[in-house]
Image (tube, rainbow, N blue to C red; front, side):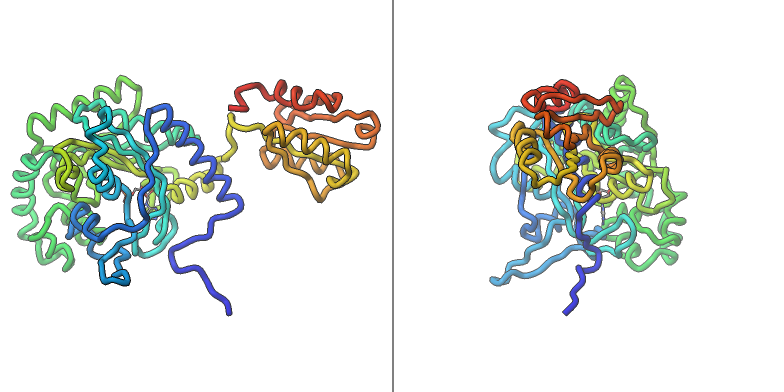
Length: 428
Ligand code: AMP
């Protein structure tokens, strides 16, 4: 019997695991620096958690959710995104009453959407997200945007574009929707059946439609930016000012919308223009000031983002970006001419590993030159070389793969020397 993985899912192994570890380690470090704490919520929730918050007329809720009855007939859904679950949890566990505000949380988890699979678009994919709850200050919007752009910077991205817009509060949106419907009305027959339904139920969702006929009708429509109330306008100005102060480049995109109903005010997206791919948004987010109260929690504002882990890795690989960390545990590669099972080599291996230093063994090669080349290619810091002479004298040769300097030293001083060569910061 030969079975394949379900369409739109992937097995992650080999090089992809290295990229994944690199991204996750990089973001974990930054979450610490920016003061975010991890939260882990279930991979499935009661269906209303998503349908009510993301919006009944969104594509996600209408077409993309993995919804099923459990054995007792309750409707459950595999999470299509992270924010709704986090809000459900924060309200349920009353986290906002006992914490210093804003409450800053992050998550790393797999998400499920029944989409048409293509490059960068999967049915099961991973997101890394951050949420900051309890502050309406522009500083908090700027801080999450800063964190998102810092993540991509630290991963090595050079040319991402940060797009920002405000979709206003319910007050600004009321007058905009009125104007927008007047604009669309004459061309209503040219919209797809879904968008015709949206026109009545939730006209803003027409902006998300990927069909070219709908896109061309919408492209000339009035923009929400022209309808912002003084408070929303002032808030956006505040965010822009802080971003400028932080030297973060951004582009105001007044046609930017996001596919969930819960967004209010500032929204943003990180887009890669270096690839000719339709799936060029690597991450995005925005404010959701009403969601906590809609879930029965306090009337508190919030903001956050999610980035796609799989899509980020895909773009990194296509751009030829590496995934080796400049800091982190020292990685050594042992090349031993008499074979790794030989007693002296085993003792050296034990010394290194028990000192908490990663050491991989060259099981195959009996040639030092080939071994060193392999170690360099795979991003190791040092090669640990054991030949007949080393065994005979009770010493070890270390080659620094950064600058190819070589040291032969007594075995008892090996660990100390490794740490000395690589510097303390590599052991953080
Ligand atoms: P969203 O939750 O739709 O705002 O998406 C945030 C990020 O998650 C996107 O910018 C993508 O990087 C990633 N993402 C969303 N949907 C998918 C998908 N179907 N497959 C892979 N990555 C996705």
